[in-house]
Image 1 (cartoon, rainbow, N blue to C red):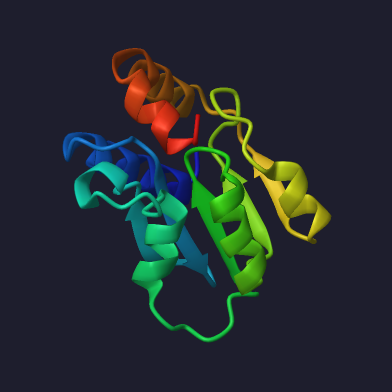
Image 2: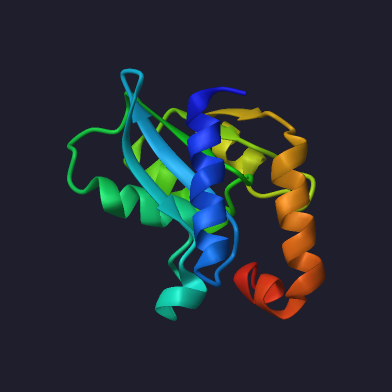
Length: 143
């Protein structure tokens, strides 16, 4: 597993330790992490504080995003996919999409390259969280 996805997993675990949903993300430019984030919906009482949104927000105003890659432990949802498309991020690398299908087709339809690494560790983190806190999970995905 590459170091960028490992960093996203570390962010997911940080979110879980804070009492939140274990989804992590990093934004990479020219082979370096320029921003990190994790789902903070529970911690900040903010329904929009998804991992990818947190990561993009933490990057600040960086100008163009078309030379960045965003890594996420889970396939981005439509909210996050919309931000990815809006800011012109051209590549998404997801840890998995088994526990949540996400918006891969939407992103592809808008010119984003989407890679699903199908990582067992990412799946297990989410499966355990969903088993333990289904109400919080279903709230996160709007169900």
